[in-house]
Length: 140
Image 1 (cartoon, rainbow, N blue to C red):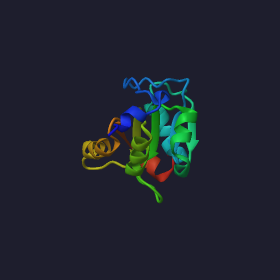
Image 2: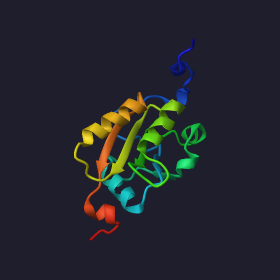
Image 3: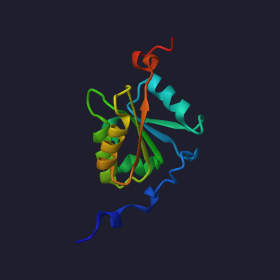
């Protein structure tokens, strides 16, 4: 029986896991709210990195091949999907980069990251915690 890792495309090579996003590749932003997008920019090593918005329904092999992201960012929770759904889709597609989930402050954020890693296999996962202004959509 052949291991699925042998079937992964060479274009989806592992990221360097150094938080230095390759600015020639966009950061793939799955259905982020504008305030979440600004929060992501503040956490990027390269704040001017191109951000590519994408709807969850369009996430798959084709979009990963088209954009070749080293970083995918998603809300931790939304009405239609959650970060676990995104992690599963990325793992199934053979993605090796980073996954950031943007969500509210939780009692044990490391537990959430560990659960995402369990689903995501070879994907480095990180939880980005929203402040009160991000959750309410106001900058005040």
